Image (cartoon, rainbow, N blue to C red; front, side):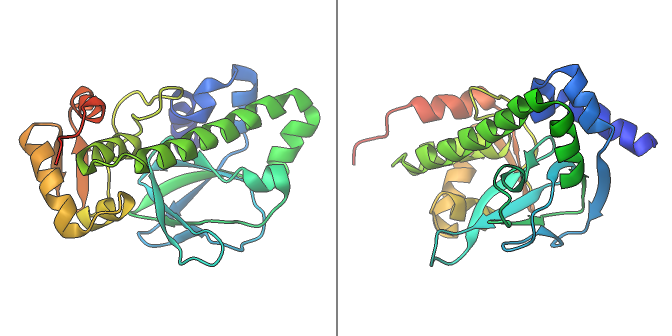
Amino acid sequence: MKGNARAAEFLAEHGWLSFTPHDFRDKVLQRIQQRKFEKGELVYQVGDAPEGLWAIIEGAVEISGSSPGAVPHLIHFAVPGFWFGEPPLIYGMRRVVTVTASRPSRLVTLPLSDCRAILEADPGAWRWIALLSAMTADLAIGVVADLLLRDPARRTSALLLRLAGMRSMVFPGKSPSPIYLSQEKVGSLVNLSRNSIIPVLQEFERRGFIKVSYGSIEVLDVAGLTATIAMEPAEN
């Protein structure tokens, strides 16, 4: 019970639920169920049967997917406060991405049956599911837009802010979250090799924008990284 109370308090102040009204928020938080995952453990994978919503309380997850016929690859890294898994509620479809705990993590789930019960009792609450879908769309658009930045430093700055939860102008995080990814995985998310991403991260660390540790990156200066994105790339 104490664990659920702490989870409810956290989720009321971070992420999707913090943008919803108290009555809807309370209905969701009264029904959440906690789950623990070890590093590398699947939350769900492509093709799994439709289930409910998920949110991260502690730890982090990696989200992998692919376009038809392509090899799956890492597309996003999510931190505490992040909600995901709403498509089956809207479309009744099977899972189209794979979600894996990137470190020991604590998540909550709102089962599909409970989601539907809340919505059947109050059809107007679909507005808040639409909000979650809009947040997912905001993230997806941001991923595509950031990948179109041609300069590697600007592209990496945008990625680090997004992974830390500080990139969205519509749904901003309150403070940067740690990024528990290797430098190689960070590089893959911006289409850079390990040898190419390391000098960029080293320069950001020299300028005090980030702190790089084994298996993690901490964003120290949101304004500095944001200013880097706005700068015009140097002419070759």
